[in-house]
Length: 289
Image 1 (cartoon, rainbow, N blue to C red):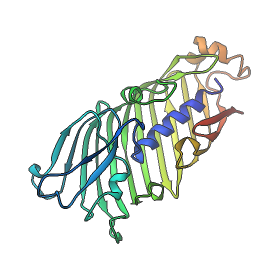
Image 2 (image 1 turned 180 degrees about the horizontal axis):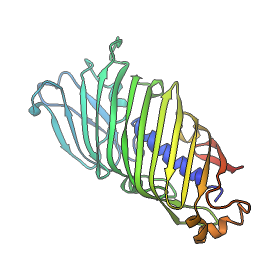
Image 3 (image 1 turned 30 degrees about the vertical axis):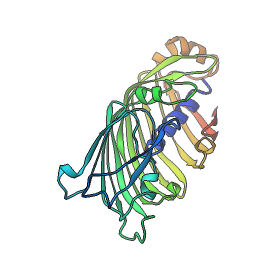
């Protein structure tokens, strides 16, 4: 139980932010390059790191006919921050992709104060019905299945250069109808269903502020906030979060709840259990108060 919200915070935060800053889903992908049709061939060069999961990509230049876009049917194509550093003549680029049984759309354009191809750039990335189970299956995390459900939301960014940590942005996300899996000594592999998770985040100067992260479910309710100081090695990013969780009567009546009673002896259903999460994303420490 002591690692339950620690794992939850790690999985959800790393997933949402991982998507928001356009990280590749894993490092097993190959480098790919795509050129648009003849009309755009001299204007745009796009590259990216390619994990499994993306089934199609469409790139379009606004104001041009559909024929000038290119539709790629491929098993391994996705965008990474290198798309920014490899652009020439700073075109506006619309993004539409099918990935992990859902859809991604967005726009990237040069900011008004851009002075070179290095940017800065601004735009947004939106997510609809991203299947976290499918994404999880394509990743290499050692304990898969920590969180399932459908991810929706949008991340709006600005001041994005070839150094992605210079990016500023804000995002609102929700994950609906899923399960969390508890991988600890007292309840390994036990499903914790939830109805909805909502999150509000912002990013600036290499720091992610978790403004509000709310979990709603029949077994457990919870809320936390705090900050994550990003590191180029994502697993070494520093975590400082605090919040509370409220196990319900249904939770305490479950097999896991009966075990949890031995840890939280003085708590009744609905009582808040404050906690902190510190350490790094790769080694987080969950501590109830």
